[in-house]
Amino acid sequence: MATFIERKTRQYVAIKILKQDSFSMLNAMKELIQRYPKGTVKSITCNRGVEFVHQFNVHLIESSFGIKIYYANPYSPHERGANEYHNGLLREYYPKPTGFNKVSQNQLDESVKSINTRPRKILKWKSAIFRFDRECLKLR
Image 1 (cartoon, helix red, strand yellow):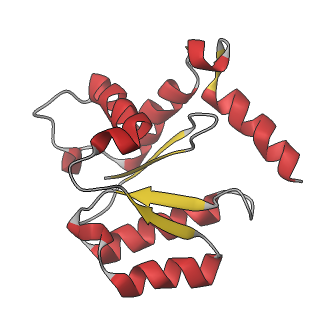
Image 2 (cartoon, rainbow, N blue to C red):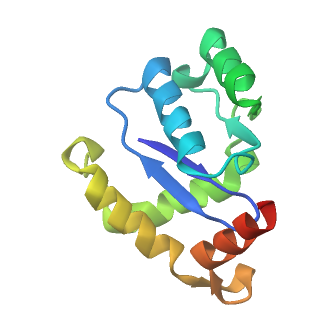
């Protein structure tokens, strides 16, 4: 599964991928970018997993969409803390040892929607989806 989080609004996205490889991750990134209005996704910060290190795919995303790809330092999950936190929230719906191969994209979307509609203290008790929609309006 590929998960993404927008830093300012905490909008969370989870996209089911077939395999943990660079081709599947490339497709997930393309889906993320195409899901939102142009200019919404400006950069992506990745961990050092094998699915992110294929330089041709990284260059393809950067050149095709004008998006910068950054890498977190090795052994530094705190550099992607919001994503790690939200992955933990997703585990509330699918506790270990649940395998995500048994979870459909529709089930995943419902769980993510539930997370994104929760009021959050960090967002002054607004939901992530509310804040994200407001930010998207500013782009028009």
